Length: 426
Image 1 (tube, rainbow, N blue to C red):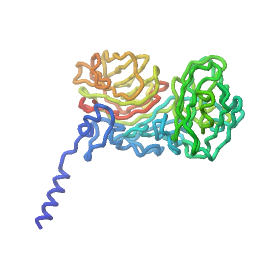
Image 2: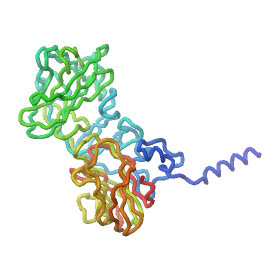
Image 3: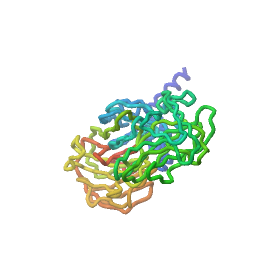
Image 4: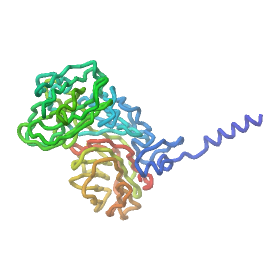
């Protein structure tokens, strides 16, 4: 009897225990922005929170689910008028067969990106102009001296998408030769890439991706037992196109190759499959219908991962309009732009912040917080206090946008928080 009473009392106490906000449980992880295990008793931000360290509402990696929600319950409305590739890995190295999943129209890409905690990928439109990206035996890919291609070779592992479509490229050993394609996109910056690995029982060697016409030094990659994506970004004019070759003549007898790509842009984006024509991936948008209070005291914060250098934009808008381009109704617009620097402005802000020399690539967290109408607007970038601006209370909002046309992050967003308690965004 006493045992039963004790068990009942313990159960009642556990149920009555106050829930603890996730970030207070993960202070160290949160401030270093490395994620962590969520609290057993989780409470989201009071206004809005998306993709927290515990991944509440995010589903599973690359499930292509359309039932993603903020941890505060709001449903994600995601659009993309084309298929889109989701990568369970970090997209660069240690890629395993099946890590690349094709998500259908309007299905979001949710991934750990090779780290802990699920994140949302948001990318601008891109076009792969390299034809027959998975058929390197095709005549569109020009073979150099003594170079041969065996299509869908069983000596190769399964491709990143889980199919037996990796081609075995045998290099003849002639200096500077390889496989290439003349894409000639004009006077633009391009990002060329290939997925490479060694065949079963093959030797480790070094390959190089370059431009067949401009012939820069290019980028080397060690061909190992797992799949890597080797990338080159450069400005081109006139005749140009991606080329894969031995880094040193005679070093690489053969290698398994897949997914030849050439995109216009400063960095590669998620892989785009092509066949006989250049193929585009549509721009992506992400928004939530969310009731945001008129917070005279509060904060906005976001973490991001991107490999883009020199052209990275993030916009988090609180607005009363489903169309993010209607700026008249914006309550707060939180932007990190290389063209405009780190700034926060809109109806809810006065002079705002404009303090960084430009957004940098990598993994980072940026926060803006204020403590009352007419007070100082503070900014934190990776925990470092920036030059402050000023804040004026605005109006409420009914939408939160995580994208803005032609100004998307081209990367991954997580730990997005809007709260009346400024400490919850840090």
